[in-house]
Length: 193
Image (cartoon, rainbow, N blue to C red; front, side):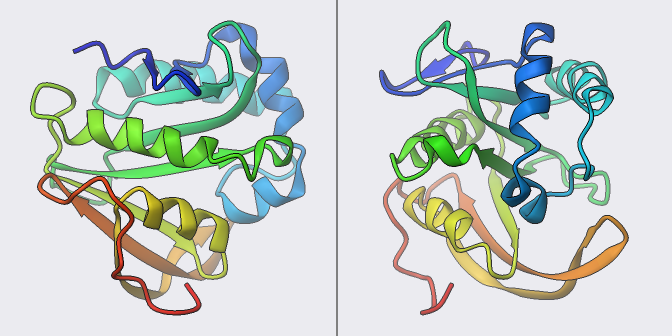
């Protein structure tokens, strides 16, 4: 299975390239992206270069792939999505999904489509062959929670002080999707999440 390039006909996912560095730098100036991620703030071109050279390239070699989300195969980057095998864990069969989307592309269902594609290849025994994918977001990130819910992730709870963002501990929501879970919206989310 070729996991490098994924598409459902509406979204196209491909590894971000050196030619995307300026676009990534510009998009990551958006305050709402920095507010909900662990990326550096302020975000500089050197951060985008480090991301491409030190995260994207090595990640594909270690089952931690990153895709740029585009509306067309040769279109500009409008978001990013990836799977990461966290260093804190010795479980090689679990990865964490993470994503961000530029405000200009929000509200169109693009990230849900991307999450469904990445989750499918992540859990496929002929793909990346993970048994479990995990989603985490800082408490209050309702847009991210909506994507995870629509992509079939089951809400599993609140981790008090469960994540570190630029030196500060933040409460974190966590959800998971197992290989046997259906690719349909999960009803197992509490009100308000």
